[in-house]
Image (cartoon, rainbow, N blue to C red; front, side, top):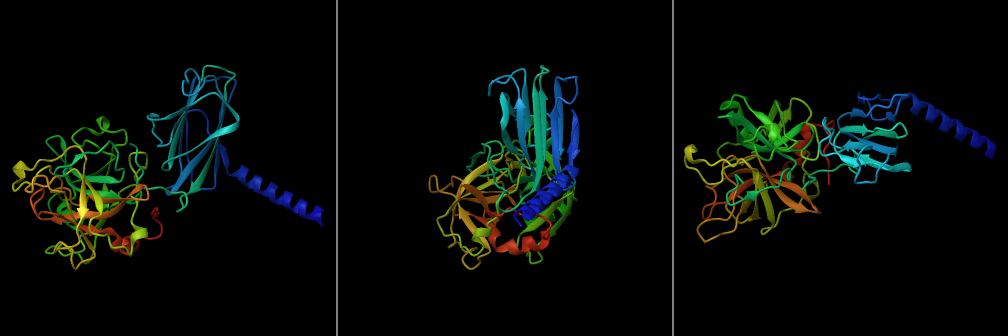
Length: 415
């Protein structure tokens, strides 16, 4: 009986190995591979012939909502981190120029280096001038789940009284921009919640539709929007709007239900400087206490402007700390809103506040060692003035609505 069980187990393992082999492929030097499913295996061998090229480049792309994991075995001269003539370069972002890559060398024949992509793209470069060097890379595709996904990762002022953020400090921030005098004019902000959707305000969509006639782009990965994308961060990119859905309960006079979802024309490329925000699923039935400190961000005005002529746009993404105050009149009897105010400087001016053109941008709470999107900047009284405060959409009260619009096919990371 034991022998029969062993034979059955062997046949099962052999069948699995054959199926895996059928789904496995090799990539040649300077090749590209786009996975069509998540159960494939890709091998990269170096060298692949008697001729040893000095450089090889490989680009791998997996389906949306998956990531790539790599095991790298190599026999290369040099000792990390001072790799010179022979090395393996890995871009977890899938950067075509291998910018910001990790560099490996030395001997790893039995204990491979294991590394995973941030989004669904990964690039590899192999540089060698020796025929004795060798590299083997085994790639596997894995679906994102709530156990292995991530959100609001950090690599590193329309905000009145705010300060500059670090480049790509808030990887989920998006700006709806139009071109004005060769600069990107930020109309509103938004927050990336998946590879295809951005959360913003309903009144921003009305402006984009009625004033700008949809002639706007979505800027992501930006730090200084006055600079051309190729002179800003290496993660700067633009996307077109495919569609927008406003909450059916939105009321212009009261700004009730001032929330909307924007779908991009193509999937956004996630990398170290662009990714999804953590949504407050763990706080769905939670009332944010008065006195809670939160962080507002945006490209809006740096001082209140009664006239557009003196509206001082911030070209650098700004951040400011605000304090939740549920006793303010707009939030006393409405749990779908969060009111937040900055601290006073001289009893007349506020040190910080959100302002014009910050609409749609995020209000974040720092929970469990990560930023969580609690609010969307909606409206307020003036900005940066005595007794002024911002009124924010409380995202936790709209999670069911978000899911009903996005559907089950779009992955939302819950942390």
